[in-house]
Length: 126
Image (tube, rainbow, N blue to C red; front, side):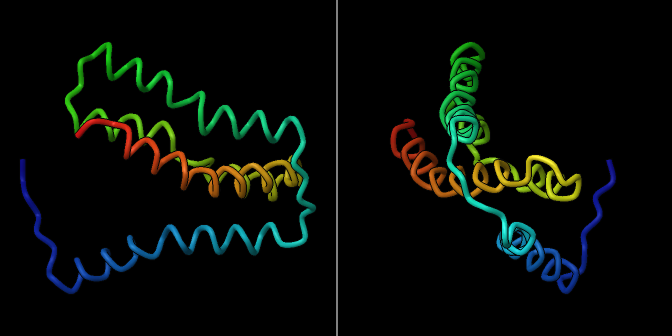
């Protein structure tokens, strides 16, 4: 397998883009959702409950079933608990359907994700 080493200026550029992408994505999503009416209804609460609490459960079962070690186990469970992806909301806006529930789901899921991700990090053994 061939190894290709990028020059330092290219690595710095990729690193800068990588660090900015999360914030830029949320900023762009905020611009897209500007003007959407926020409503926290049963459907949005169900979306959030599933994404932030139910979805990590099978990941925990998978970790136990496959006997994954500490660091890898934490990564798998945290991957299952990440907040709702912004791409779903962008597609909803573009298709002009489900935009308001998507906006509410992403907003609350991201805010709640701060607590759920922190709790998972604290609770999981090192």
